[in-house]
Image 1 (cartoon, helix red, strand yellow):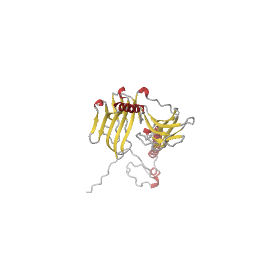
Image 2 (cartoon, one colour; image 1 turned 60 degrees about the vertical axis):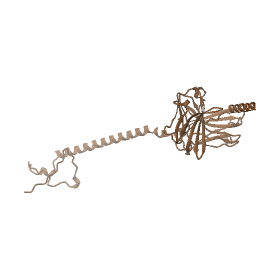
Image 3 (tube, rainbow, N blue to C red; image 1 turned 180 degrees about the vertical axis):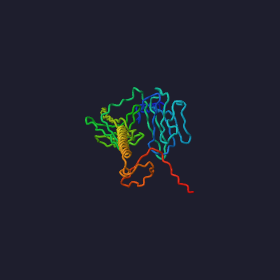
Image 4 (tube, rainbow, N blue to C red; image 1 turned 180 degrees about the horizontal axis):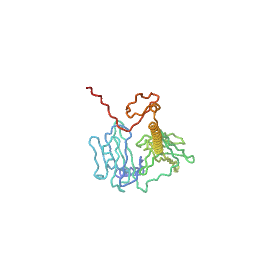
Length: 336
């Protein structure tokens, strides 16, 4: 009986070892690295746990409860911490300090939420030399913020495609966005931090994903991976650029130059008009000083002239005279 139990236990271990762990994100090992875990819904978080996962067991790393706070297991004390110190309800990313090769492996972010229940995300940490480098992009898509962008790829006709996977490539990590098994007609539920729309239809020869309301953070490389039932595989890479203000910023130098030119033109025009007006007034003033009126020439010279003209000019001959002296207020005469 004991021998049979031992064989069953060995069979269970062998089965567990042979099963491939399905990962949501691949992270390149670094001395200081972050395992990103952001719950994409607004449900209430009741408890969260981080585990290091092997084929036979789960090793507890950290646990968080809104009621009881944070607990770091002794083997990870002083080496891991939560990125969001304020513990936002949906962001429970975990950072490593002084990480080493012993930290390579699979990690699970396991959440208890209300009312949806449990939710988990699996993150794979790999060696730097094992981190897959993305192929050069083939197509380039440019979009403005706020639009719905569709990324699509045509499946090859030379062999039967069994599975198509969409990924976003970053220098430090690879996020799995969608995975469709065409033979089974099953679609993978993405654990990516933003919403992604896709379909999974048996017999389809084209695969696509839709990114609704794109933002600047959506810019980057996207890869479509094909896998055939016969073992062949191929990839198609495209680049998305969301011009978050870049399009308008490139016109700023031209606008600034145009404004400067307009200001210079207005300044020169004002100075020119002022000089011309000043010269005209100066000529008129000289003419008035050296030319006596006709009725003055008829009269005898008289040194006692009245400071006020007896016959003020009419409206037609009135002219503004600009005198460079201060204006004094007139005081009324005091009656005796």
